[in-house]
Image: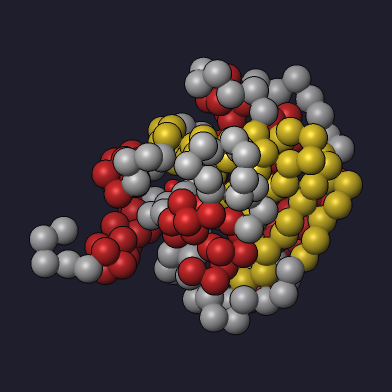
Length: 207
Ligand SMILES: C[S@@+](CC[C@H](N)C(=O)[O-])C[C@H]1O[C@@H](n2cnc3c(N)ncnc32)[C@H](O)[C@@H]1O
């Protein structure tokens, strides 16, 4: 990273991950600060919250959460790509980076003595996932979210008409009592909306 600014270094790490695993990344650039801030706003800024990110990538939402969370918070991130895991561990020493699959969220958290979390923030590329994987991960989120907790994720506006994106939106409505669709963040590349979900209605013995 010598001689390189942090955003440029992040972009290089992101593009390298995109080349290696295009089907797991599903974006052309890291989330911008406005979208990241919107997602992070569901995390409590006081008390001793436990917050988990799914698919943090190069850490856009990680940075926004780092600015928002109190020093007493526990901040975990589940990332499937080994090189991104290394990048996150170096760039965010206070972050508990878990190298694993979000589909095993409850088990990964239980291994770290976490049974419930106050917020789940996702950077996962839902529109690339088959329905079973979308369902499996949403069930895991529902299983670990504390009463009063929130789940935040996003979708690219241009992809909203796609079948998998529409099915994901319908799955959210099935899985949560409340789903709020936010304004379009036009400043993001590409423009995106976010979904803020509360009160999971799908509770399983997942994990
Ligand atoms: C769209 S990128 C996240 C971009 C991120 N917002 C950023 O700014 O860098 C999606 C991320 O989800 C990760 N991912 C994909 N499938 C996953 C899974 N099943 N479990 C955990 N992480 C996963 C990818 O490796 C990638 O880092």
